[in-house]
Length: 178
Image (cartoon, rainbow, N blue to C red; front, side):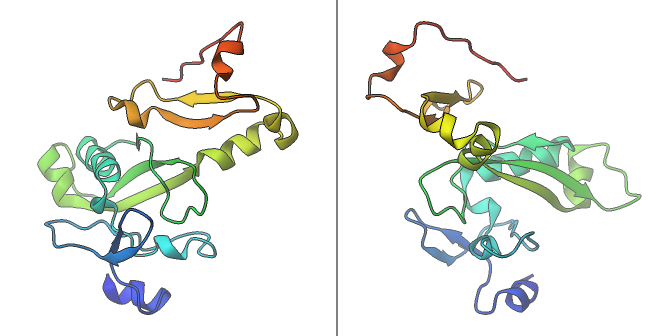
C-alpha cells in the first residue's frame, strides 16, 4: 500500500489529519483504510493515502458498510482536500472478494477487498442545484435529523440576512429524505 501511494504521490504514505489540516503519519492501529485511487487526482492530492479509519465519523461509516455489506452514507465530515469551511459526506460501497461467501459479519470482514466511495462537498452540491445568483439572495439551512450528535446535524447553512434570519421565515417546509 505504501509503495502504491509513493508511486502516485512521492513522499506521502498512509496519513491522518490533525485539526487545522496538518497531515501526519497514521498512528498505529489494527486496521487501516487508506485512499489509494482518486479520480480526479488533480485537486485531491491531499486525500491520497489518507486513512479513513483515523477519523471517527468516517470509521463508523466504513465499518457499517463492511459489516452490513450494503451502501452507507456517512455523517457530516470536513473533506481532507477542502480548502473552504464547508462540510461534505461520503457514500460508501464495500467490495468483497469475488466468488467468496459474505453471508455473515465475520465472512464480510474476512473477504473485504476495499471500498468504492463517492465524495460530496455540500456547498458545491448546493451550488449545482440552486443557481449562485439565487443562492446568494436566499437563506438556506440543510440539516441531517438522523444524526445523533447535534454538532453533526447542520450540513449547510447559507444566510442572506442577519443572524436572526430564521425568525423572518413565515413558512417552513421540511423535506425529509429517507
